Length: 514
Ligand code: KIV
Ligand code: ZN
Image 1 (spheres, helix red, strand yellow):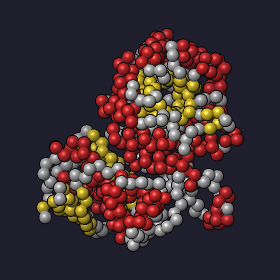
Image 2 (cartoon, protein in one colour):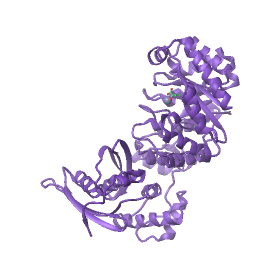
Image 3 (cartoon, protein in one colour):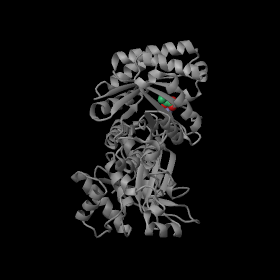
């Protein structure tokens, strides 16, 4: 079995998704989970893009053990210096230097020519190697690069000291046969590739990122670059969980193995979706909420008789837990603790109490609390930023022949503030009240609402992205009442703003003090 190295770029290419920018603590939380998942390399960021990213990558390099920690840099000295500054304290630092190698990139973007591009790449790799023992070089837009030139730039950068060569399909243009062929031919034409790792990095513009990565593996790629849930620039990157499960489920075809801890896949997917505020489509392979649910009568009958009739993977192997006990409003702390342990959560006493309080609140309004409900409650409570404003209570009056009216009471430092507003709809009305009490206004740029489970009493989970000042803050909230879930998500985004220093800018709360 040939080992395939998994290079995770969720925190770099994935973070390029508009509005998914993370702070240092959030990046660290995801990086710790990626280490638990067993990835070989975590590309932690692009440190020269902002001082905040430099700090976040440095934090990961200092604290996360196990995988190599990579930082991206353009093929220029200043970028490489900053990237090195960020990763130098890692157990295994890696500098990832890239340069456009296709004529389109060289002529239109770099306004240069092929010879100068090779020179630039070689200089950059040599410089990076003078700092760091592990240097990866990426031929950006590799799949559209003229073949002879691609071989030349690869040969030269290996000579300059690169120990990983990555040939990306940057614009997601390649077809599986073609890309597989490219990898096979490169191995034949550039014997020096046998001394280094050959890597691929595929984008999903034509929906072929995973197929292209698999074709490359079949034809000799050693490393795949991918992201959790397939997030990334434009249509995204190849999805880590899909690549890993193809290789595992069809092991006899590929005869390869990875070090990924399969049972951490689902949890990692949920965590990334929650923290980056990017919902996973229900029909997403491997981790979508419908990936293991059978709805037609014929399928249900088959699965009850024997799961293998319609299932090619075992959900529990991916960490998707089946429910053993049913939680209701009458369940005590012990039952909740037991169920949380079954789901793999171990919470400190303070977080447990918060989760318990929220659980009782939700269970009072919903008959049974299932695994997904509990997962949603825990994930929201665990990731909570300090709550400058807490939701105390709210009331909505709405109908098709009346102006919707919302009254909301928020708590700040033990004092409660109430206000009311009308709006175009109940969501608009509730947002207006939150803005009034917090004396802060934002622009809603994204709003997603989904039911966590099936059924009329499902818990609603809302995700919002709100622009306050020039920064986009994400927020998440859940409740059996979808307007309340939305209000909680909105308030969560505002609390992120305040936690980021917005509190100093905020005036005293408005509204009637009680
Ligand atoms: O898509 C791409 O080519 C990249 C490189 C920086 C590796 O993300
Ligand atoms: Zn990319």
